[in-house]
Image 1 (cartoon, rainbow, N blue to C red):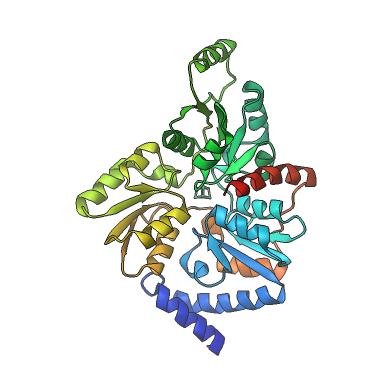
Image 2: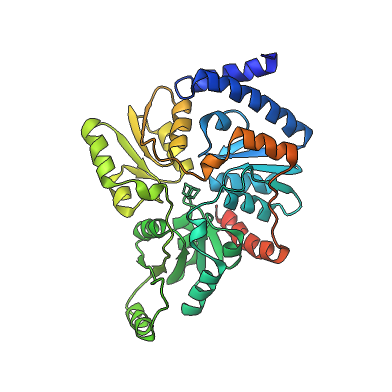
Length: 354
Ligand code: SF4
């Protein structure tokens, strides 16, 4: 092994010896070395989402974090190329904020069940049904949906964004569970409209009931295919075996799961919670690679995770694909300029709120 590769391997081994088999770490160290060299040659920056697999997460990103943290980093980079180790909607957000840069997403298959649950046409139909009601859109959507929205939010700032608008009605898209959890946190009521065309009678009934509602949110039917899998029974089973476990749930989990947990927050908030609140063991109800990544950072604490639950889209991003992305300048994220400008308004408004 070359000295640089050997140093990388030692660093990975120190962090990940309990998580990644040694033979795999040696291969990953070679790959990481080539990626880091190419990154310098191409004047690129690599952003790594918290859900990236452990060896990638701990070796190649310049910046790591949740959607909001990476959005902020993407907005300030002076590099020519941004390689986004995350899913497509995240790379699109980087492009929205950096129109003159080349933005690459390492796999064309890195989608998202939430982003795919809603189209720009759906947003226009909701606007027609609820005229004048502002649209808050979760960043886990594609650029055309962001372009139809008034403001974006992440799971970390959703309640703050909703409250910042100071109006009585909000359309909150597309995650049904996040909307319900935000409604609960902010004391709002949520209505999920029917997917089918809504009859005049239903619209009249909605309007009539709306007259008595102090504040309401209108949601959508999208769900994260990872977080919707966690159940209250999972929590009860783990608590029965490990009574001292502290349960952390992502707000894309159902309201029942969030209610049964000890803490709910974005991936960034979960990382801070584990760092700041000392407990012997935690159950992480989120994508299981993130469990590996927190475990590597906190070797003195036990992370219990339900490891069959891996996001298939995040899983598409590998070190091999990242290397190929830099070698071949693939897969380039391009957006129509008018659409990008409209989406940028919503994203920047969110960043200003923080
Ligand atoms: S974890 Fe859920 S929200 Fe995140 S990319 Fe995967 S499917 Fe989408």
